[in-house]
Length: 258
Image (cartoon, rainbow, N blue to C red):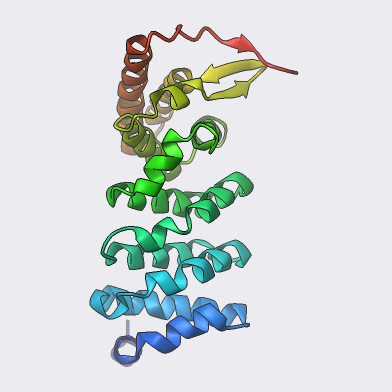
């Protein structure tokens, strides 16, 4: 990079970091121009990277606008969710982020976009890290359908359209679920594959098999799939053991509806 270009970039970064967070947050929350709102998201992300404390207390205000923007944005939908994750990381507690759980789950149910799916799962993981009582309640509530949703996502993004980042996030969520008293909900969830209903341990075994095959291929993701193979194999055994402790009958695969 030429010296003049480097100086221009440095000046732009300095301008962003010295700018107040409030106007950027206001533009994101109330702006009508999609490009302008996305630019404000980008600038606030830059500001967060340089001065995280300057963005404290913005999560509550921007939860809904950022998720709405993520759904509406045709390009870079992951940027608003990435900013929301950053803002949540400097929050005291998980209250602000908990309010958007229904929206996050709605996104996961309705999107096929891997970027938006991955970003939404990262928000759930952030809630897990914060020991969110609301997320725990979602896992334990059989009517919420979280177990079914996550299992369907796992089958979709680990078996049908393999995505390493999404798969790793989902495995971490199933690992989290093993530490929550929601075991019956998780083990009752099923996903249909070729006319057969698969349970969580069976899908995890399929994930492990697929990851083993992909780990043998020469690619930049080889080591990542090796890790997925190990973790999914371990989780499959763990959930099978949980099923035995609960005295649930072992799944043998049931014919689903055509």
